[in-house]
Length: 320
Ligand code: COA
Image (cartoon, rainbow, N blue to C red):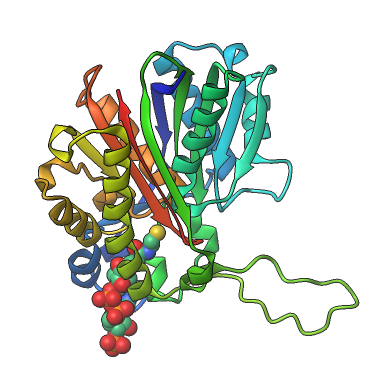
C-alpha cells in the first residue's frame, strides 16, 4: 500500500537574523538579498542543534498524527549537517522518543533529502515491511558557512521538519528522483581536515562553496521537468494540483517553475522570506506551516519537490 502523510511538525531556532543584521557582518545589502532571492531573514541556531530541532519536530509530528513512538517502524533523517558522524541523528531521535521498535538511519541527499526519505518509506510500504514511519529533514547549515563569503552565507538558515507516514489506501501517487554527480562541484562542503600522521598538507576547504549560476540553471530546468514527470506518472494534471510545495531556495526559481508549469504563483506557498534555504529541512518545514495554517483538506492533491547539492532532485504527487 502507498505511504500517506498523517502528521507534520517543525522546529526553528529562536534567533531570527534579518538581512539588515547581516549588513553589519558581510559586505551585502538587504536590497541585494531581497531582489535576487526573496529572502528577508533566516533562523540561526545558537542553543539549538540539528538533533534537538529534529527531536522537537518529530514530537510535534507524532502529536499531530496521534501516533505513539512505539508504533514507529522506521525513522529516516535527511541531513547534510548532523551533529556527529555517528551515531546517526535518526538513532538519536529514536532514543529521545523511545521509539524502541524502529529501524533508524540518516541519508545524505542535501535539499532533496526529505523527498528521498519519503521515496524510501514509500518503497518499504509498498513492499509491506513497514506500516508507520517518521521522515525528518533537519539542518544546522550555519555551522557550514564561511561567514565572510557573502555569496553563500546570506542564503541559508537552520531548522527541522518532520512527517509521520502510514501505509494506506491512498497517499503517494508517484515519485521521481534523480542525481547528477558529474555536476556535483556546483555546490560543495568539505569534511573535516585529515590529521593522521601519514597525510601531509591536507588543503581541503571546510565551508560551503557554490557556483550560484550553475545551480540556478540546474534548478529552473530540472525542477519543472521532474514535476511534469511525476504528474504524468500519477496521471494528474497540473491544474488539478492544489499546492506545489517547492524547496525554498530562491523566489526567482519558484516563479520560473510556476511559469514553466503554466500555474499561478498563488499555488506555490513560500516561507523562504522568513527561513531562507534550510536544505533537507526546507520542504517539511513549509509543509508543516501549510498544514498548521489549515490550508490542506483531506483528499487534496499536492506536489512536493526538492533539489540541491549532489546534484540531486525529487518530486512527488500525493493525496493529502
Ligand atoms: N550581496 C551583495 N552582492 C553580492 C552578494 C551579496 N550577498 N553575493 C554576490 N554578490 C555580488 C557578486 O560578487 C557579483 O558582483 P560582481 O558582478 O561585482 O562580481 C554580483 O553580486 C553578481 O553575482 P552573481 O553570482 O552573478 O549573482 P546572481 O545574479 O547569479 O545571483 C544567486 C546569485 C546566488 C542569488 C543566484 O545565482 C542563485 O540564486 N542561484 C541559485 C542558488 C541556490 O538556490 N542554491 C541552493 C540550491 S539548493
